[in-house]
Length: 389
Image 1: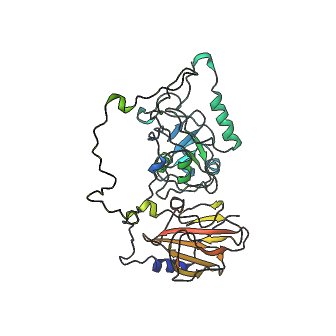
Image 2: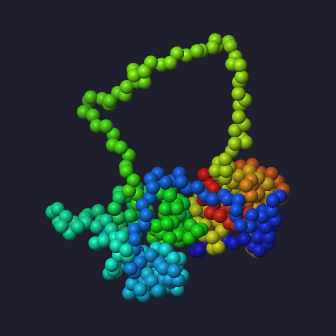
Image 3: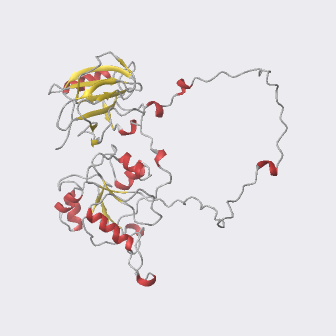
């Protein structure tokens, strides 16, 4: 069953009114509010390798092709001389689907490699072992990796590949987003998007193959080795090299002349901390955000489970969809709105003030039962995952 939820036309009008502030709507989104994923990038990612004249990038275990401007799945297949249906099915697409310039498709089988563009890649495939390797041993790691791909097993544990190695290839599972995948592999979302030619909305689809960027930055220094039983080296204390300066201390009863006022930490709350929200219900995400297709996330939860307000705010609207199911819209600071659909037994009314984590309704009975949750900046939907703790 494909789960999808789109608000009724009446709700869109409500969102337009609910998003109004004293300064009006931010139609061109110049107020900012982008997602900062730099914390996930512990090491700088390498640039994506150059493709050959046909757009193919070859690795020991697999190949990918980079789409050109105006390409479709069929045109790429014709250029490489492979079956368009197989290429489309392998990438969870249709043969007629249009592709973005720079978008990466995984190839279901190996194709002939042409001369590299600009000589950026020379000889063989990226990360391959030369034929004259000592002893002529077979790369068991590569063979095992290929067997895992053929068996459809989950992606290997997230780790940063060494420089020049074959990048990990990840198959997108239901409920995953570009942000959760980037965090799992400890890379930045921007690097993941650059390597795979993702769109501005960072959308991924179930069954899509993503290449995890590699990093050639130096690993952390190795620990100092000591003889067993000898103990660890003792650092030299600071006092041994330089005497401490003389201190001029005041008696305990003497109050300093001027005691600085305690800062008001609440007024220094940053935008990053202000945007963090709590999960409205606990459960598995059964449908991820896809702009224009699913403007929020669907969270599986048993019927009757309490639905909580993701953050403090004011109930901007209480309406119903075309099936008569209640919908709650809450307005928060920074021109943010949250939408809760698939609910029942409402506990709040329009105009009510709610606190973070306050129960506002329960999950309605359905097969399957789930909560549809959206985050909107003004009237424009955004991926809720970066906003949730």
